[in-house]
Image 1 (cartoon, rainbow, N blue to C red):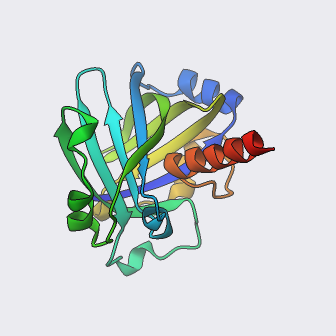
Image 2 (tube, rainbow, N blue to C red; image 1 turned 135 degrees about the vertical axis):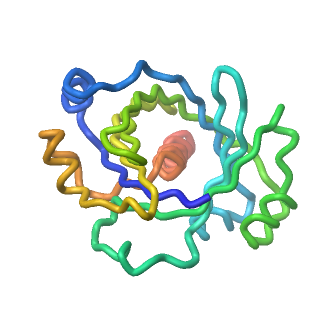
Amino acid sequence: MEEIEYKFMISRDEFDYLLKMQPFKSSVKQVNHYFIDRDNLLRLNHITVRVREYPDKKMLEIKYPRRNIHQKFYTKNENLAIRDEYSRKIQNFSEIQPDEIVAVTGIQINDIQCVGHMTTYRYVYYPYKNVKVCLDFNEYLGMYDYELEIEFKSEDFLDIDEILSNFDINPDLQHHGGKCTRFLQALKRSNVNEEK
C-alpha cells in the first residue's frame, strides 16, 4: 500500500488551538513498538519495522522507500514522505521473523529485536475526500512532542500551503523525521548519557 503524507512538528499551543478549532474526533491511543537489526541495515535503508498496538489488535507494519515516484511528487519540501507499507495483524511479537522482513524489503537481515516504544494519542478528521489530518501527542523515553500529519491518496495530491493556511498556524518546517527516527535518535542520546 502506498503512503503519502506531510509531517510537521508543532508546539503545544498550536496543538491545543487546532484541537479546539477543527472537528477532530476523540483520541485513540496507539503504542508503536520499534524493531531494529544488529547490523543497522534497516535504518541505513530507511526502513521502519514496528508493531502498532491498538486497544483491540496488534499490527505488524513495515514501511520502506517508494521505488517509483510520480513526477508530480518531486518537491523541495522535506516534510513530504512517500513510502510503501506492508501490514498484517499479529497476536504477539514472536511472530516477527527476519525472513518476512527480507521478503518484503529485499534487505538481507539476520536478526530483529524490539528496542522500545512510543505512545501516541491521535485525533483525526477528514477536511476533504481522501485527506486525513492527524493530530498526535507522542510520549517516549521520558520525552513528549506534538505532530501534525496530513495523509492523502496519490490521485488527490494537493497544495500543502493551502491546507496550512486554513489552519492558521506556523508549523516547524524543518524536517525532524518520522516517529521511528525521533524515537531512535532519543534512544541513542539516552544510551550515550548512560555511558558517561
